[in-house]
Image 1 (cartoon, one colour):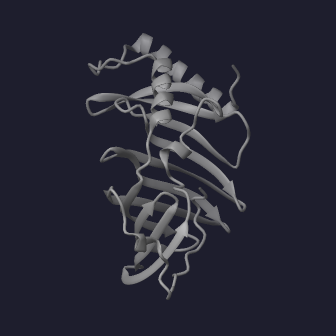
Image 2 (image 1 turned 90 degrees about the vertical axis):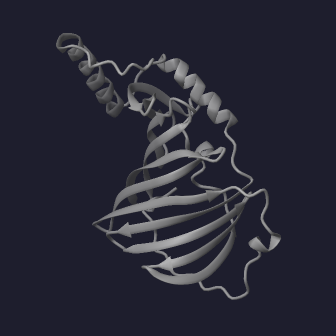
Amino acid sequence: MRFSPRVERLRGAFLAGACLGVFLGAAPSTGLVQLDSQLVLGRYLAALGSVKQPPYVVFSYRVSQAGAHNIEQTHRIFRGGSKERDETVSVEGDPVKTVQVVAVDDRYAVGRLAPRTGAYTFLFLQTRRHGKHLDYVYATEPLTPSNFTMNEVVVDGESYLPSLIRFTSVARGVHASGSIAYAKAGRYWMPIVATAAASIGGHPTRERLAWSGYSFPSSLPPATFIQPKALTVPKITASPLPL
């Protein structure tokens, strides 16, 4: 199987490292059992196939951007299905209260973003110790060129779901690269931190999103998703995280 030059360089580097280990001595054993990479990949695909999104979720997130534009905001989100209530609670450190109700899919849902074998090739790179288990790192290559691609996925060795996805994207002339980290929250696998770096108009720009305070109510009042009559939405400039 042929890979792109980027993946072939990664493959060569890890093969060289493995050969060097033969002559210099292997690294000290972690005491953990390393599974076959294809077995892990199969478990990863099965886990993605059964992953569930919460019917209702409430959380906060903070967005920070520095570079071409400086943004510092905190939001409180209430989501039920494709309906979302977005309450902006602070801007640049000052408390505000604006509400916007929209119909939108969860752009960061792990089942939406995680690469799969039907659209990507996977090349196993290495394991990483994570507490009392190993995580498995794969380089990924899209079978069809796209403006948004996943370049690497780290598979959690307990849940077999992605703990980290690295990506590159091109949108509206902006080239960006970044990563999205996931972890268990309650019974669900949710995003916790996303970072991106880009150049906008010649200005290096970085952005960070951090999610916190997840809760999963059994329902939300219908009034949650009714737009208040008075709506004032603070202007938010374009983000270099084009998901």
